[in-house]
Amino acid sequence: MEEKIKHIEELLERFFEGQTSNAEEQELYIFFGSDDLPEHLAPYKPVFGYFETGLMEEIQSSSEKQASVKPLPLRRKVLMVLTSVAAVVLAFFLLQPLFTHQNEEPDPFEGSFIVRNGERIDDLDQIRPELELKMQLALLQEERADRLLNWNADDEDPLQMIEQELKAQYCELIHQFPDEAVQQEVKDILQIECE
Image 1: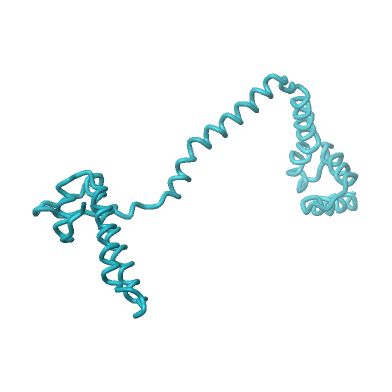
Image 2: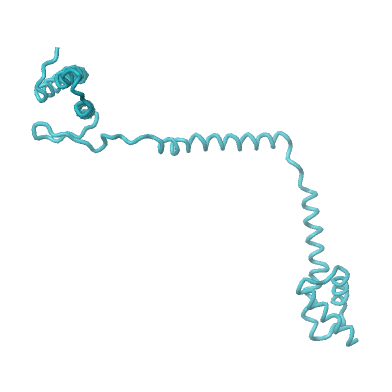
């Protein structure tokens, strides 16, 4: 009997290390299924009792539940797929502005203001035309400077040519302003007469 107990103890050690075969585990189940157990091995009886009966009951119960689950009808499957597609499309339309908004270029005039007659004006809708005009004037001045730097002595007088061109471009820009008072103010600043 001592040899049998020693063998069971070795099997227990191997069992808890996960090294037993199915046959060896069956041997443990049979041993712990008996009522005549040594006192030091008696605490293992509920463990192997569970493995032998409780685990098998759980496996059978689980397989019965799976067998009792009815497959969804085709109509319900189609409804689930269509609902999923609708949710994805809705999410796309709701999230699209977040991604497209990031690609917009910033307004170069944001935060700009002008002071006219001691009064600060920062309404972009009101001052944007003037700011754009000043930007155009600056670009024209830059163009004029480039032409002067690249002038050759053989060309006709670049200053007179540039002045005529600038005057024409200034007048064209000035006429784009809807406010005649602003037009006159810019003409006075530039000291030019437009036709």
